[in-house]
Image 1 (cartoon, rainbow, N blue to C red):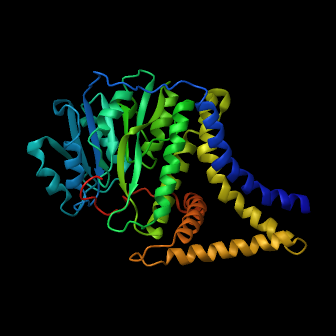
Image 2 (image 1 turned 90 degrees about the vertical axis):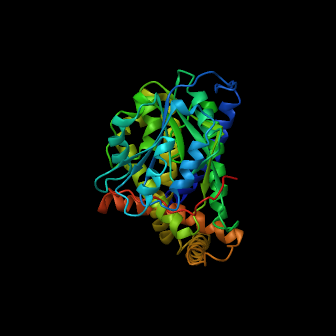
Length: 393
């Protein structure tokens, strides 16, 4: 029984080390043994594109998003900008309509339907050969669209994802650990690209071939996650493009970031359950390995922590290290709770931010599983509310 308890305790540790250290190290080894397969030179490839931005009550954000899209370094006669309003009740629709003379189009849903349902409904209106998906709170660098489209000149690439850059609006130290995590994630996607392809596109900005985008997606699933899966299922690669920058306003509080993570993880899990066959390495080879390593193993870390806690309680009566581990967990949990209550107006100390973010990210996985099992995933989309970027950095 003692051995079983020790194995229960060891499992989340092994998973964490593999997911966050060993997996990136293996990717680095594989990537540095291969030539760069991305398009590195400017091309004359300029297909028609449709830029799609879902929005719900984004009156403080939508004008800035549209201005950033109109400033894209891409032929405007080949660019359609379509804003999707999820039955907004504020001034969003009026603001979008004021750009009609500059070619910006509006599609309004008659009732709240959710992001994926809007995107499904909008497919009939899209005229571009390539679809660029973004978000109302995101600001694209003027070169971003062109850099994404350049990669799709390669017929083997079906999805090109942008590089998220986390920026603070107003308070430089707000949720600083989020920026470090985003940087880590972007470096990992760059390695996956060199090693064969990414397993999930950035919801902030990605481009996809229109034929792939038009394939139906259930309205309660995540289209940005499924984009890379759909591409691989149809024989294409999905890649991350470092030069295609999307400036992402940092969430101002840990509680808001936690809520975003719960929603995102729950939808991601449900999306993966719908294509569970893609976890079969006999059918999808190295892609399945990357998918399991990047997504499944990360989700299993906190889930394996539940039986590990039971194992620690069992071992605590006879093992000093188990008692110390329990005390450490209590301390970390207390610190994270303190961080969740930290006043937004005050900069959070770096160590407190790191611990709070790490604990919250793992607890969010457990919360997401509970939501899926007992309550079902959110059927009505609620966008993450971020501070508006006045001008892209």
